[in-house]
Length: 300
Length: 306
Image 1 (cartoon, rainbow over the protein chains, first blue to last red):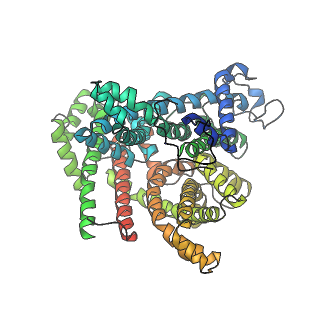
Image 2 (image 1 turned 135 degrees about the horizontal axis):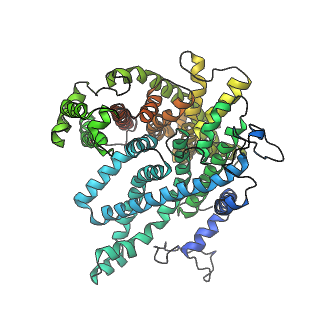
Image 3 (image 1 turned 90 degrees about the vertical axis):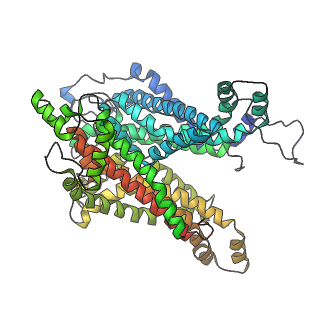
């Protein structure tokens, strides 16, 4: 959290001691640590990160090697989540798939956030016709149901994980642009921006050094929630055959290939779906917690 | 009110033009020569030239755009590369199944969403609230295709009560509309909870309580009615979400609608079809947003129709 963030002027409170100085971060932490669900979600996400990083080195089975002696086996002590139509261990594939989901979710939101922040900054800072054009285009992009926009982009670029990242990033962009534009409009009027202008600081420096850090608290909630949505959308696209292609152990693609065995081996679809669900749930719960902790109106 | 309506309707025009440009450019954004794409992989050079001439692809872009728009306004959306039939004919058959599925989904998701939201708000901080809100955040996080497959697994494969997919009777609607509506029900529940909680803080609610009305009357007569205004807006906006969701759900349940048509078209690289589908999806979305805006103005007496 930046020191430059505008701090609320503390109202005089009789119960408060003078030495109890509240920085924006301690204020945030005071509210955040009370939210048990959000903390559990945050811990789960840490675990998810660790899994994504070390997963491929610790899994008990090779994720690509077929084992035709053990096809479509249900969950057992040897294969915790059972095996698929090629006898591959689903547990290992789900663990390795965490890396793909995390990479796709994180990178698409990051690209969307960067693009959106730059557009929002320009839009809010300069105003006028640039603002009009950018916001109009954002409205149009916003008007498309996200997944249809993504499918349109993939229809142009062709299927594949990189194109999925790009497609998901594009439809995250307008919301970031709106959030950052809103904060920019407010921060633009503050005294320190005025001061920076009066000593002749360049526009670019004011935008990125003085205004952008102030928009972070607004971005961070949306960023967290968006990772969940992006993982969900990316896996939907892979499920539809537009993202990761088999035999990549991507969760959506695994689900798609398990569809044909729903009657005989439903565990093939159950576990990857569960992995998507729990991961997205964790990001959404964390996002909710962050929102409540950063919202100055809520005080629990 | 009339003025407001006219202004809102006219306000849609720039958006429509932008979308039509995006959709028009679609076929030009695909890497490669559009004429060759339309002609197919194994067409001869002469065939490709013929198609280029026929579709006017050798003319300047703005002329092509005007021709394209003229076609659209006359109901000509091009010819499907897959079936060689007019795109409009194909889409016409797919429109009703998607619309009915969407309406079904919105119907039950509104009922469940409102119920969960109101119960949670009234019992704020109690177990009903925690259960309701946990169910809601789960609903938002569920991959719809997975939920669909699991419901099929339980109700069709195991119990044999409902068909696994297809279109026709009422029974065919149950699983797809439940799957499609789950996410929306969750969003409505969360939203309804916060709107009801806002209204519960109002003075007139305190007055109603102070004059001794029982909880039920306060909630239904005073709170619910007033909370409805923002909720109506929210429900309208969710239509777009459902349209997007239909793409995935229709594939899961082999539903003969717009969504599954879009997926098939992408797989087949039937570009004129994809182009028109995206156009129609966005048109629907814009029209719905417009209706919601106007409805909001009708419902909310505080809004000024300058």
